[in-house]
Image (cartoon, rainbow, N blue to C red; front, side, top):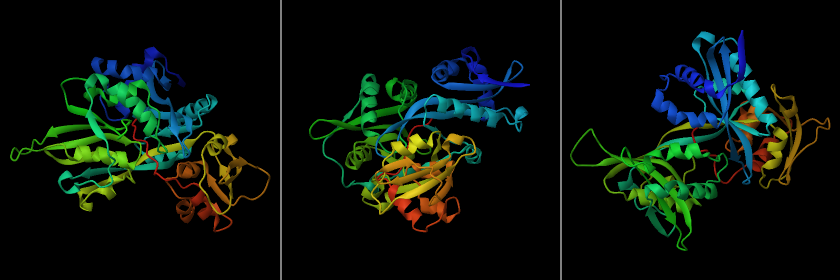
Length: 405
């Protein structure tokens, strides 16, 4: 009989080995495990056991997510989900996920968030695609000059000052919907190459305004091209770039665009509405390689989630009926207007009906209600209601997380 329970600290490495196997990796050696272990301590961990052998696992980190209006909601960052091939199709994943989400709700976490290796899986548990990002490249020779960049100055950080400098900047300026708070272990992992001497060439530079306020940073890496030797040149990668506003971010792009010898800058994840694509001198200097599903969201407490975010001005209000196969407390009817959201459950027919996964998809403002209505995922009584909902849930900046977990 399979037992599902909280993972004991002495069992973390066995659970880690199961995940590595399920996700196409070799189990960690002693050196790699020593680096990974702190991230296990700082997580909620459930594992499945067949006798004395771990055969499955799911877990969650505890952080906050920025939502429209700037509030931050307690979130379970679902991670490390896997079942050994020998124990699939026995309902283990559903049992573990249900318990993980139930316990997260009991702790007061309003949202659950994840990055999906297989996107079809998590829609079964009420997750919706709430935010996308773009993999991009920029050719500096034809991108220059970058228009709209803020004035001020740039400073390259010394390794021993990077973490203490960058953390408060991130907390102050990374305010798009979908951004998460970062635990210390995440900063250590992200900035490892920049704070340690030797290894890969990784750097952090910060921007200061004309009044001396530090208001943005860029973390990047550079390397020589190895496929040819003449003329000498290199490639650069933007790991992350955050500024207080678009002008500051453009100043950071202007800085990296003037780093000598770099033929092309690459970034694996950038906001889909990144300002630099409109600021380059030659539009073809900015290339969007592909757009991918960055952030999957699940509302664990619909009432708290709808009440916490703000809504844009719109010509009228809507009533919304939500269904949830996992959590009965999430089912009901809400009235939403520019003034806010309130539960009414008065027996009236709602203007719009949708399941909790579709609500998660529109919650951060990255997906339009009308788009889901057009394909039958939202049902409505009055045709103008989805347009009102689009206006209410609109946001000035597209959702973007920018953190892997």
